[in-house]
Each structure stands twice: as C-alpha cells, then as structure tokens.
Amino acid sequence: MLVSFIKKAIIIVSLVVIYQIAWFVYVYLVPYTKGELKLSGSFSTKRILLDPGHGGSDLGTPVASPLMEKDFNLTFSKCLIAHFSAADNISADLSRNSDIYLGRWQRVERANRGGYDAFISVHGNCCSRHSGGYMVIHSANGPSARDSERLAKCIADSLDREGFTPHRFWPILPPLDRLVIPRLSDWIRYCPSTYRLGTFINTGYDITVLDHAQCPAVLIEVGFLSNARDLAQMNNPTFLDRFASAVQVGLEVFFTGNGVPG
Ligand SMILES: [Zn+2]
Image (cartoon, rainbow, N blue to C red):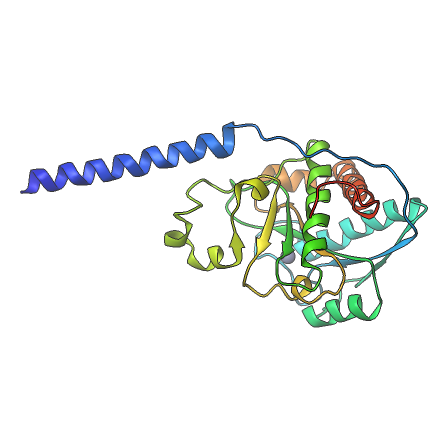
C-alpha cells in the first residue's frame, strides 16, 4: 500500500518536473521572432503626457535599494522629455516635475482633460533578485484598449530591436500560476505571443491610469530595482538614453500607423 502510494507520488512529481523543464526550455531557450518596425510616413504634432509614477510620501516599490523608485521614475521621465523635445513633432508634458505626491485619479484626469494623444506611465519594478528586464503594460479595459495594445507592441518591438531584455516570468507561470500567485494571475493574462514581447494584458485588476485614460495608454517598467544588473543599468545615463530613444521610435512607429496591427 505504502509502496504503491510512493510510486504514484514519484510519477506525479516526475511529470511536474518534466512539465516545468519543458516550460523552461520554451521560455528561456527558444528564440522569438522580433517584430518588424517600419518607420515610414509622417504625422502631425502629437502631445504626450509622461507620468513619473509615485512621488512624495509614495516611495514606489518596497525595495531596499539606494535608488528609490519615485526618483528613478522622475529621472527617466525627464530623459524621455529631453528626447521628445529634440523631435519636430512630439511635445510632452510631465504629470509631476518634482518629488510631490499625486493620486492615481489626478494623473489620469490630467491626461483626459489635456486631450493628449498618448499617456506613458514610467515605473521601476521589484521582485526577486533573479527577475529582470523591461515590461510594457497596457489594459484590455480602457476606452482606447485596441490602440493601447498597438502602442505597447510598437514600443516593445522597438525595445527588442535595440537589444533590451524583456522580462520573462519564471516558468512556474503559467498555468500553475493560479496555484502559486492567484492574485497575480487575476490581473495578468499570460499569452506567450505577447508576454515574450514583454507586453502584458490587464484583464481585471484596476490599473486606474490605464483603465480610465481616454487616449492610448501604457505603463513601462524599465527594469527591476531588486536586480543588481538592472539597477546598475537604471543608474547609467547611457542606458537610459538608449532606452528613451527606443521608446521614442516605438511612439513614432505608432503615430505613423505602421508597426504591428492592433
Ligand atoms: Zn511603480
């Protein structure tokens, strides 16, 4: 009786291990096809609202890092502004220009009242020290859901093409994720074709700034402050410059109507 139970347990554990190895191979070792970026055609001047996440008493990700997320978000948003202001046809404003607290609704209402053409929220991520890479998040719920998805893909494709590393989840996700982190799997629908681009779809969890923006809206997690390699890059002005330039190209592809279909 005990022997047969042990045999069954060994078989089940072996199947789970094989399954996880297969996921590992698929997620980490199979190369993916980078999206094609076609930058042709022109577009009239577009106005962007850049939203450095957190600020003031809201420090951002709870990570014991010498670089606080709220400060990183403002630094990188200013880097993006500098890039955009060098372009002829993109003008950008900041939702906050200093270390002040802004509520989620204040941010999205400013985007909606200002009649902006796109909204980009800037964040730094935090997880285990092994997690790394960028993420571009968009919502499947907002009024501009289709355009937001296309904008996220254009930016992610541009980042990929420039060699930036997208975040890939440890392969215990999915679909075993529901057993491990049920709340996380509620708000992110993992889809290999999109999450390998670092693009995530929010299907239920309220990311206010994305769900309620009238214009195409994305949230960029530049990297993980909890990861030593990402942290070094996020402190490196040259890295941020290259990253900002790739985001700008993604925006330009989006506004010319080229890039991946929505
Ligand atoms: Zn954040």
